[in-house]
Amino acid sequence: MKTFDVYKHPVQGYQAVKVGFSWPAFFFTWIWAFIKKLWGYGLAFIGVIFIFLVVETAFTQGGNFGGTLIMLLLQFGLFVLFGVKGNDWRNKDLKKRGYEHVQTLRAETPDAAVASVTKPNAD
Image 1: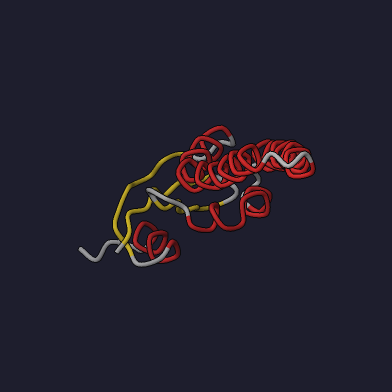
Image 2: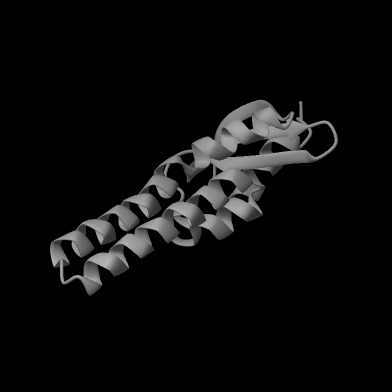
């Protein structure tokens, strides 16, 4: 079971965001950001990774393998940053777009978390 924050928008409906590390954000970075409507983060990733790649190429062509290694570690760190902070960025973005935090709960999937919040209580 995972922990999810569930948000509700009066028009857009419900969204569930997993608490903790985001593997999709780690592996798919800018694609994940664009799918989640985090345009600024996706564009920033593309810009920063482009700069890192240009500098890495310069180090490699200059024979500076220490510099190349540092650039590879920085690139990897950028992927880790997305994994660690991705869900936090998504939570903040949903609040900014008018979603209200409804509940934090444990569920197997995001859809199960939303279903737990939306099902009528059997009293």
